[in-house]
Image (cartoon, rainbow, N blue to C red; front, side, top):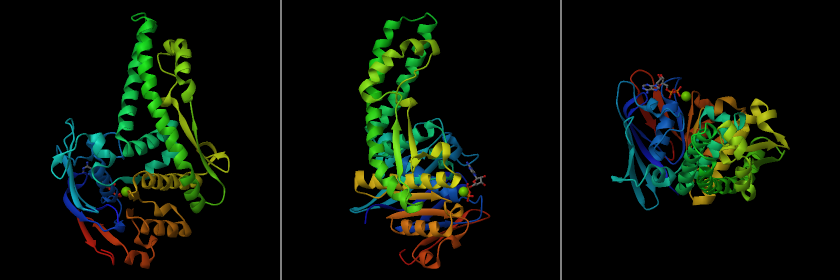
Length: 372
Ligand SMILES: Nc1ncnc2c1ncn2[C@@H]1O[C@H](COP(=O)(O)OP(=O)(O)O)[C@@H](O)[C@H]1O
Ligand SMILES: [Mg+2]
């Protein structure tokens, strides 16, 4: 048995004033009517274990209305005992995650497994990964690699900053306030960081592809799924391409070459799903990417991440629901929200912990399943 989440306390988190939820290894099904806090609970788990929310870039939204801070506390079961982790957050102030009462060295390190366990989320908005813009795909990839390698997270953040600064410089050169010679120093920095990002992404895509092919094969059918990283410039010619683009970059005031312009394509039977996939294919491919991410984390760390899947069952047919239920049961821990517990067979529910969220003042009651 590897690491899993035993208990979560949410203070001023979204609609929760102060609630504690106990969880079991294996499948946890979060049941409740709409707008009662199912998604918020899954979000809180993610927040507790990574130090940030995957749901929105406007993080202050997670703080309960009329409050000025929130806090999550989690007890994580590990092979050699347990770990207590907490994240306190007051908008405008630095977050301070702690592990067994000791401040984590950094939020980046905390997010990369500092809590003792990683998470793979699926929120309905994640359909963007296949359906949306290249930026949505890059974000997925960067988040996945960052959860495994804090050095990558730092390089990616530094790279984004360096490109911003280069863009400012380009505009100053264009407007006659700086000379073109000053670009050389920035370009060296941009290329150095950009190469780290490129290498990390290309390696991850290579590793993810067979996992994706397996999971999409199981979810969809025999057509072969593929992932292809598409470069604005490949590693070998990156520095050269950036240099060659200088003139045009100065004119436009933006950096046209580098990993911030890259993409990866998800295809099925040779057809690009972003452009040509049906809604159903895009949905299954997104799910399959999340499963592939699970396999990738397992391969890289030897540990299962916790699966946090929000409201996935309703959009699937019965056969795929059964497949998913099996998949969740075979995971070290999965927390799945649904309005309708009947999406799971009674035998499955018997082996699960059902967490009921009911109306009125929010109360969370847990009924331990057979494994509880
Ligand atoms: N920061 C917040 N403070 C208080 N309530 C919030 C906050 N953010 C969202 N909510 C409330 O949480 C509820 C939605 O919870 P959610 O978890 O999305 O429900 P569901 O069970 O449908 O997934 C809404 O009623 C919303 O008003
Ligand atoms: Mg919801």
